[in-house]
Length: 99
Length: 353
Image (cartoon, rainbow over all chains, first blue to last red):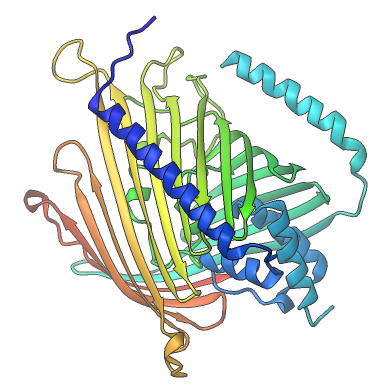
């Protein structure tokens, strides 16, 4: 079995990871308190996720069926949760004046 | 690695058997994509137009849980034609999508999310995503990815992949280790593993960490490891302010240093930071479509000859929501002993469709 050496680099890594986890838990807890009981709407999910990378795509640009394909495509690229993908699709389809 | 491959085959077979009965609805096919043309001017050289990209994307929803998609890249007016990716995505579970084929490697966010010219805020790649982590970088293999909501906007997203991996000559530029024309392993049959974990603690922030590990030398029994590490972060405020950055490091093992029998690593580091501010909150109609952007990027390699920095200030003008005219000045800075006159003025029209 190889000797496991505790180096300064490894200690720094463990401290950094611990700090990152602590920071994340703090953020999540704060968010939970602030958003307790609030369900996000499709418009909110769309704005928070899609607008981070590219400018707004209008619901009228595609048919309802096409949006379904595009949202699935973006679900993988953008790491959307299944629930987020569903809400974004709902928002695009409900606001599509062509349909 | 053989055990991993056997496990994967068994797992995918199981997935196929369990989920096949759920299929059987109408399929849909659409075409999307992007293109851009550029005029670049550099002192002492002829200014030139370039139809840099014409990249159609084909999306085929076979069933509710199965999506096939591919992107073909025509670069420089068709001078370079590459299949950027072609993959099947299987929405296995709310938290798990299995992708197989040739896919863009989710290392950081620039390679698989931001590199299309109508999305990238600045023409050209940052230095962190050129010689340290190549862009566009796609690999043949299998990937599991997904997102898990925690509360409100908080969530975790992840991607884990097993791929053929980068392969080439010892100590070669990492960009040149990509298999662009043929995605098969050539001589080196070692597989590489990697992944990215992204955390969205609040609406405005995402932080990610990426890693990749494999052996890269093009021999039958490869020995030289190539490990990539990266962190990325973004802060987006109300769709008009965007701050983002990435730091990438490559530890590339080599054996033929000047000292006999010595083994060492070429440590290559790259980074970029980018700020973009849309002027629409000023409510001045003339400035509504304008966005001011600046990007700073750099690379540090062993020795000073390859060290570079880049500063690109510029303006984006949104003609439509997906059509952008960009005007940028790219200031390229090398080490004092290796200075060259290569600053550029770049005019670009990029369009997503």
